[in-house]
View 1 (cartoon, rainbow, N blue to C red):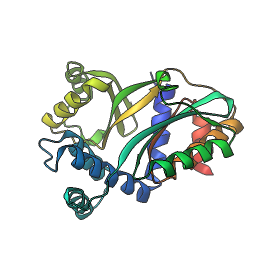
View 2: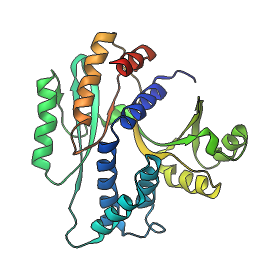
View 3: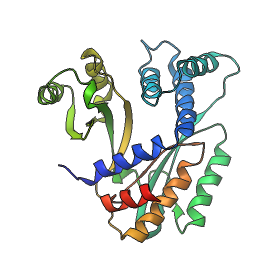
Length: 251
């Protein structure tokens, strides 16, 4: 399975996030706020909050920042956020799915539409592209955090929803169905394995191959979406080649 396009997409996305830590902190604080508003501030009874804190630790967010975000979200003056999604096409028929957390839907939809319009794309109707993606649970674990044989771990996790397991250099990527996300998270916790990040991804059924120049144009559009503070995640079905990753990393 090495070299499969979805892993290249994930690898590139994590690299892009690591390069923009300040924005990642902002997105995680929003996720903490939504989680607390949804189910309270007790991590033992709020799996979404537990995941958000886990991800915050994975990007080295200071503990005081995490605690401050939880305290603020628990107060009566906390910001009220709404979760919305937008779907559309970039040039060459590349599908783009955008997940947002916002306190102003009118602002957010205007910003998203503007990026599509200014870059030769088009905002579509909600639900028009969702069928192109599968929702999956994705766990990233540093290899040196695993306290058992890798092959034994893979076999152990199959009974808890593991669908795919990949080792790339010092990082292990685990994929499970959306429905098994919580089960997998609990099992990894039982095994005392520290997870670098855990999140729900939208993985394309098929990817669209473009030449390097056109691919770079698409990734520039993706980056424009990611720069928006209301945008939590951007998914697309562009095939990410090693050549494209190298070009983006060197630009």
